[in-house]
Length: 260
Image 1 (spheres, rainbow, N blue to C red):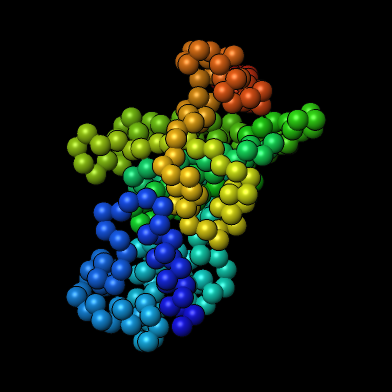
Image 2 (image 1 turned 30 degrees about the vertical axis):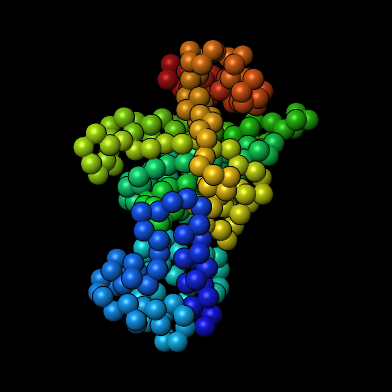
């Protein structure tokens, strides 16, 4: 019954939030995961009246991007963040999963931590990043948030954003003609960021917590180091705060220094 409860937890999280073309139920799982029409057997798996095979659990976990160990034993977390050693390390995961959408998520803490959420399908989301990627150089008291490694990560994050937007322009993961990768920049609370990093919540629930996300454009704006868009420097400062301008100035200074 414990495994059945975890299956139900995943299905409930997937079915909540926003409209799906099809809700997840026994017939859907039989057709799309088991690739047969034995709905009764799948129903027994879901309600715990029949032992689930490891083959079924492995396919279920892969399809919905759930941790296999957690699903089988309850140990660990259901939606672990895929960790990269540095921001550009995310590129391999992006190219392997070929997402239909990428969400740049920034939290409201003074550190301004960032992660990426990949929408693989309407039913599967995954978070990628590191345990702690602060983009703000200093906190409100002027104390440094990052050291040498953290500063390098900020520069790499800028490069990552540029490359992801290039993927969109190149229609690199397009499944249909004239379809581009969808990119959305969202702001989330410190508490929600902690949940994503810990991996105990479906990333989809964070995205759609308050309805469909509005685009804050923070990652897109970060690319404008010469402040040519959207009213210039002061408008960015008003929209995103002093930390944003300081980070842009740091990136611009280091970028031009290393390319001279």
